[in-house]
Amino acid sequence: MRKSPVDIDKQNAVVRIRGLYKSFDTLDVLMGMDLDLYKGENIVVLGRSGSGKSVLIKLIAGLLKPDKGTIRVAGEEVDRLSPKELQELRLKIGFLYQGSALYDSMTVRENLEFPLVRNSPPLTRKERDAAVYEVLENVGLAQSIDKMPAELSGGQKKRVGIARTLILHPDIMLYDEPTAGLDPITSSDIITLINEVQQKYQTSSVIITHDLTCAKATGDRLALITDGKFSREGSFEEVFRTGDTEAKKFYDYNFIIDP
Image 1 (tube, one colour):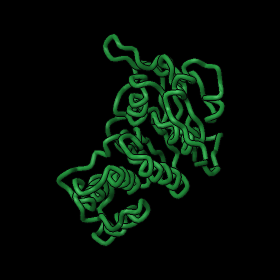
Image 2 (tube, helix red, strand yellow):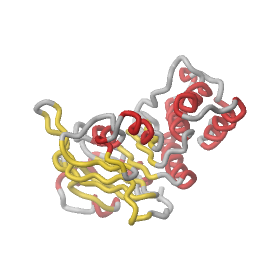
Image 3 (cartoon, helix red, strand yellow):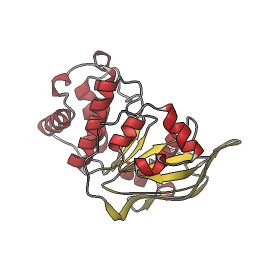
Image 4 (tube, one colour):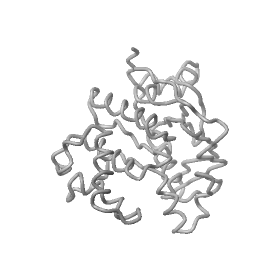
């Protein structure tokens, strides 16, 4: 499974992180992290459990505040924004939670309508229906529009979660373990969908994953966290074809299927 080339604007960093520190009580998690995400790029962030991967994307989305350092998203310094400004910025960010975070009491249609009602100017019923059908078609689930989340498989829930983020046409996508808990065939489908979203919606994405098959197939660039910083960064081959002990252990733990 190889990734098709995409147009990446390396003169335009949609996310720019410098000197980022974050601790929880006495636990130091991020310790001077630097990162750029360029327009049109998928960057995969790898690291051990507890290395700070999910903390990183929560900081990008403004769900956590850094202890030190700067995070600029779409030119805005996230921790300096007012609540209203932060809410406006989040409209440009799609966040796929590991568990998809669907409302169990709502149908698929209602789950997708929720961000439209909450965040958009008032839309007519016809406009809402058109928006819902469009994103469901794009994730291959138009036939499930009136189902409840309990009637969906794990892979279908992930697809609906992606559709719900896409309905506001975000510029930036944040994926938290998108293939976690899925069988290999369903994981392959989600990997394909992530790449299709990048191509069709021209998104820039941060993808958190332990799955090296997902990393290799979706990442234009990979970054490996070690001891609170990025220790290696580059293509899949540049990160893992090395004598670096941490990278080798991470690679050896995974099973990679080459095409």
